[in-house]
Length: 351
Image 1 (cartoon, rainbow, N blue to C red):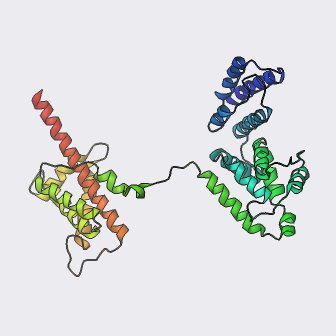
Image 2: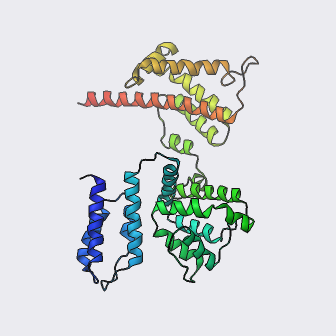
């Protein structure tokens, strides 16, 4: 059996058990419910799990059972429906909004009853008319309009919700009669969907901690080479970067880049070659050699280490940051490889 058949079998067994008993054996019911849950995917799994379907007395809470059936139908729809038409694609987008945001029905209910002022206002009588015109046998019971519609929507599978949106919510006649701009309402609905899609995203709150992600990630560990002047240049570049002196930071990290070439040999060309060979592993040494050459050329042709009038100035903040982190990453990588080799040599000697 595939996952669709497993889910269908589990849910139909569970539902049949409920329908055949006026008073439920809670232990047996929970076992059958768990069998359904294990065949669901998130967020359907969590929502189904959280539903209270039975009173402690064993009485069935049918309104929640209807929501459980909707969750089951939505999962089956997602498993089996491969979008082929415009309607299929739109229904899947609507389902995605429902999946991502537990307030999806509440937002949609606001639009249907007109508590969202971009949509026609509907009194109790017109709410009933709205649903019955669409073929749903529903009559508003006089309770709070928005909450009643919200709870009703939770019991409808996504295919019915799509019908409510496309055939009811955006019927032109309603907007003409209410003197509302349907284009503004459509735009608002689109914004609602976008909000739903991102409702559970974790926001970047670095600014609240006064953090810069590049600064924190690259500066979290102290880079220490065997060469103290090199370490000083790196530290100076850090300090200037953090204080906002991007030009000064780039100048110092380029000085560090040039000095790193002499760690293994006083001759820069020979030292750079040895360092590139040391860096080589998953990547060929030529790649690192090309990187050193490219950055050296940038330093020679732009106002980074040399400020003659024939050198081009770099004033764009983003460009300076890009150049800084490019050079910083290479120096950092080379030093780490050098330190790693020296550690291995010490271990060999000790052995």
